[in-house]
Image (tube, rainbow, N blue to C red; front, side, top):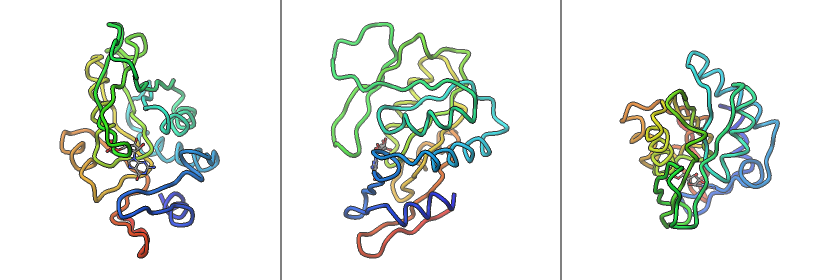
Length: 191
Ligand code: 5GP
């Protein structure tokens, strides 16, 4: 999606060669006009697919998921990052290794909000090693629901997550795919 690529080029900040900061428009301050265009693009890509729920993960996925949900006309459920080990039995849980924080945490969704009738579009801001997606896909499958596909804002295609998730047969649509990035040389996108 050219609009997102241009915005990343203009306002994204590369740290080292594997962290991209987009907090001026995506995951701290949020550009809602841009989110609306992203929502329309995911809707265009998944127009032929039955979707009745969007699942994301707190915190950075929530904003983009909510705006996308208006295009799809479906509710949003977000997986909570759980701080306590005493997780009650009425939730689906999964473990995720955080790329940015370098530690493992639990995510959970109430059994009330995910079930066998759900056809779920998973949305997140970044795809790096695929840990967050793997955890979210497990929650959907534990609930007996169907993964209709994944919608990612920025995929770092030089990291293995996207290829790994696609290799399991799950459809992943990323709006911007970064082939490489470097503090000095800048960002190269790929299709
Ligand atoms: P993964 O689970 O695919 O390894 O990493 C995805 C998660 O890590 C995303 O939910 C996102 O919050 C975070 N993340 C991964 N890479 C980056 C990055 O380059 N910049 C930012 N801001 N977040 C990232």
